[in-house]
Image 1: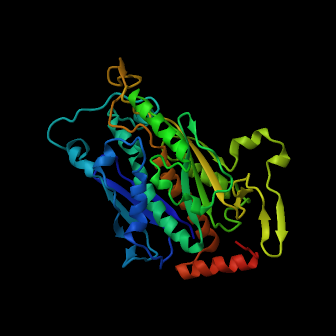
Image 2 (image 1 turned 30 degrees about the vertical axis):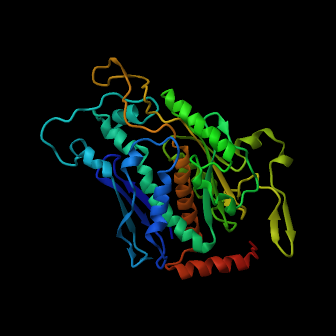
Image 3 (image 1 turned 90 degrees about the horizontal axis):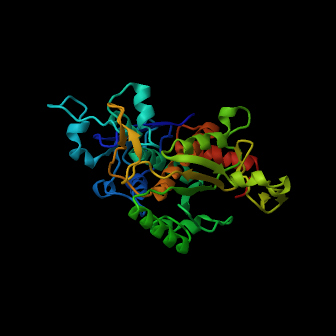
Length: 387
């Protein structure tokens, strides 16, 4: 059994759609299971005016009845309130009069490569779909994946480690309880002092007409060992997670566990020694591997980090070229954010959840939730897994 999802929609079009296929029947859901994560995606110091317009809610179009999944594809709609201000420019059908085209591609965005690839003359035909507004649909689908994983004992969290030049202290011993107040921080940082410095860094960048990137981390707890496989390149879970994270807008790097740091260590400092005792079974005292070895989960917390570049839409535009006249010009200036690293962490949770939910579906199958839970329990018993 596989899990598949897709999204559709443009940034200022009528709305966004997410379709998720492969969840078993009988999963209990409430509207807040989806809407709470949609609201979390809109958090974070440095967001722009769009977040004052939108109040994202998921409208279920199929696959759920009376608060339970049916086993059929689930379709979710997220309406764009801002469409009311863009109806003439983004109407699916012809409108009276001419609509001004955009010919000013932004460095760092999909604009120029997109119009060359598809043969468009209007950059808006590219930038609307390439916009990170699309991630609202991913978060909605990911929220369903997280709801599926919870009865299996899996929980997923994220936090911000760096914004601009400001980094937070790192900890190797984070537990689920440590994330209880992460969304109370305006930058979703677990360290209060670093969080204050990050806010100041964002304010400084905004005053200077700049944007900022950073690093966020996603952690998943309660995973069984053996998700993913080593037998073929496409079944390795680390590769699948890397692809999922790198598919998020503005991501430029991904690391599992200690990532690039292990490249400068000797082997004895890079790997996680294995121990056994009758009470706890197999255990490790370190987690340099970030919960993945040989493309499979080890049962330790999964740790994935992502590096995000500064957003390419700047209030003081960079130099570009008018694609109609080929003359030098300033890049398109649109409403934008100064920093979206805190929100990107929530998107990262969604993408990790979708990959992990897919791995559970592939390994354990089951048409109904009771079958999935029974299969997971039987597997834990067979391998004598003690959480």
